[in-house]
Length: 106
Image 1 (cartoon, one colour):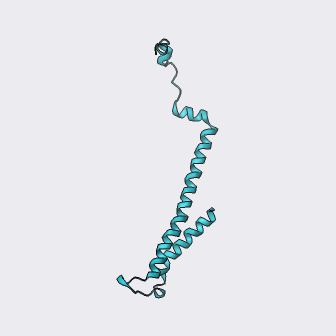
Image 2: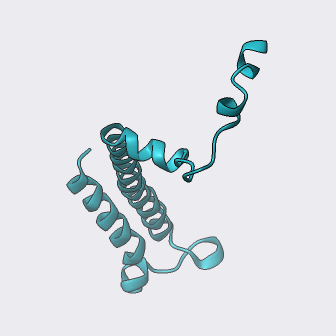
Image 3: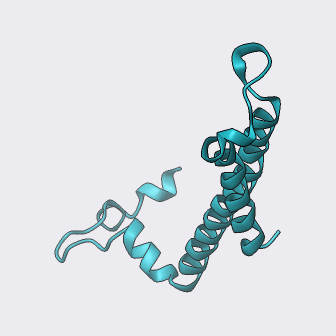
């Protein structure tokens, strides 16, 4: 499926869902609960078609966002390192620099 197909699925699904509401004369009330089976079927299939189109579009955006984040992380590892572990201010030494023998004791 392509983005164009997903948009058409969404549009046709929406049209199928609102058709019984826009033209109630074409769907006379009959049966139990005074509902027309054709109208119910159109609305149900409208939800299915529209849902498939919307799901594809949302997943496409999520996947595109993940790819963009991965590309940004891959292209700027130094920036990510700065974000995760910023440099210490001047004049402050790490505990390893003050006590170099500690890491050897383990």
